[in-house]
Image: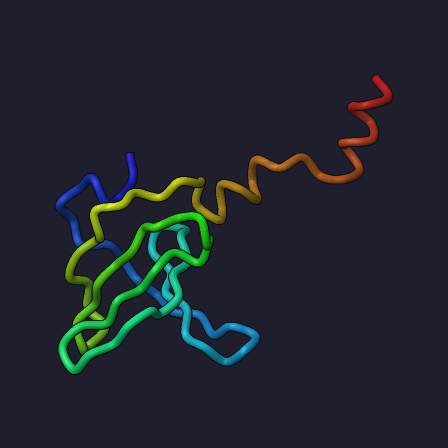
Length: 94
């Protein structure tokens, strides 16, 4: 179950990209800022084919998720489920 299915306010944090842009991190998903008004900032998932999004207020506090769910696993799940390169070759030889 993703955090968008619960009524709890998620824990958010921010990263700085290589291009010096702020990135939003919620539950292992990374979002890029899309639009910003004086009241609300809109963030979209960094994966271009995923339409999931989040709205924050002007104080960077969570308001809501958009209606579209993520179409992929969170970042940490993707890294933890991948087979290391040295094990791939051993698995092929077996």
